[in-house]
Image (cartoon, rainbow, N blue to C red):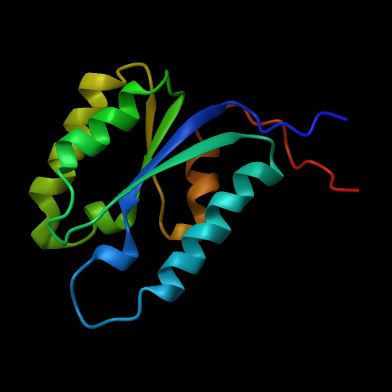
Length: 134
């Protein structure tokens, strides 16, 4: 039985909930991200994440560019934290243009919630379906 993980085909770009300033509990969002990412493995689709903070500890362009250049991607999912807040429009534009520049062959997808990230990618890539665990 082959227990190796499939090669990553999908890159998920989003905010690290633990590094977003404000007085809020990041754990529910982090848990939802984990659930959403686990769905890729359930379907036999390799995934990597590129999460960055808004606390000033990351150079967003460098972080995202490094992830985009790591390999050819079939799909790049841009998370809601990057694109939904009105005060994040410039950040969203920056990320979209980095994807366009460094992964021009990748489909771009948008999730509605962290838990439906796989569904967003699956609209644009061929998926083998759920894998059995037993």
